[in-house]
Each structure stands twice: as structure tokens, then as C-alpha cells.
Image 1 (spheres, rainbow, N blue to C red):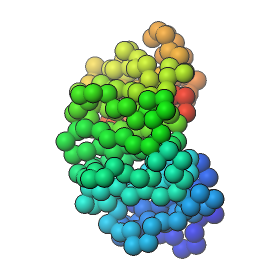
Image 2: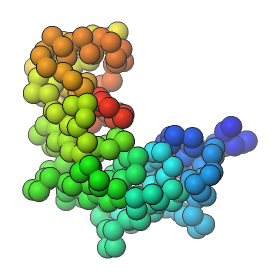
Image 3: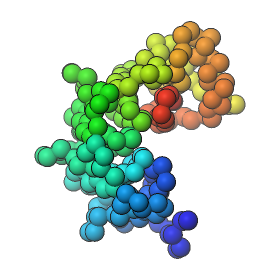
Length: 223
């Protein structure tokens, strides 16, 4: 249940059984299941600019570029690497976490049993990140996508035809000459026709902002 009188919220994030809200004053509120302390926001946490949540843990990005984590810590996902700084974005996976730094590089920590924390060597010029159950995704400044981690359902196989796609009303897709918009669902996609079918089945709604995407257990959506 949403806390009574909750207001001044600027961002929200959802874990499996808990919710997190970032307030305009830079503080964080959490509610829901607390079996793994995932709603125990660290005392004194302020100056927060972004939040992320998944499974049983939560992350907060502070204005000074540092990251704070709390909740379930099965694989070390709540403990940011010592010295991590200059972070501009965060993403929480099942038992791993990601941070995008101001220089366009990515740092990952937590469970890496299937390669989800093995950031590809030389990965740079990244502008957005996302984390799934056991895989990770990075969007580069040139509009290309890099994925790593578990690939049991093809979720790290970036579809070549995804670039230049645009979502239109009703979940349909059309080819676009604009390099600033593209969309794909990466899960056992073999051909452009298969991609079209996947998009129709997924019923993706129109989104017009590059870099806004969602990642789930066995598929990735980019728009």
C-alpha cells in the first residue's frame, strides 16, 4: 500500500515485492515486503538524484556521483565497488548492479555467475544502461546496443535489423530513416518478419524518447 500522504515524488522504481520513490527533496521512501530489508532506506540518505530496484534490492544514485545500495545481498549486489564515483545512471538486476559513469564507461558488480557483470572490454561511449535477471544491456552514443550475460533465450543476441525501427500506434512498427529512434524485442528473433511478429505480439506502445527502454527476464525492449 502506498504510504499515506506521499507527495512530491519525482521518480519511482519497482522491485519484485517492494516499491521505491524518490522525492523532490532528494530523499527516498520505500514500502512493501521487507523480508530482505529492501524497504529499510539507509538513515541519513539524502541528495539522491536517481533510484533503481529489482528482486530484493534497491539502489540510489547521489548527487556527488556515488551509489548506495540496500536490501538482499545474495551476490554482493548492494555493495558498490570501493572508489566508485562520477556515476550518472544506475540499474538493478536480479542479483547484480550496473553503473554508468560520466566518461561513458560501465561498472558492474554482484553475481557474475553467467557473465552478467563481465562488462565487454573496451566498451565506451555508453549513454544508457539496463539490467535484467541475469543479463545487462548498454546503449551507445552511436545508437548501437551491446549486451552480455545469460543468453538462454537469445536476450543478448542484438538483432541487426533493430536499428532504424520506429514504434507507431498500436504496437506496429515501420522502417525509419531517422537514426534517433529504433525499437526491437530480442528473444529468439531470426528474421525481420519474425521481429515484426514479436513487436505485434508484445503490443509495445508509442514512446518517442531515445534511450528509454525496459528489460525483463528473457527479453529486451528498446525504443
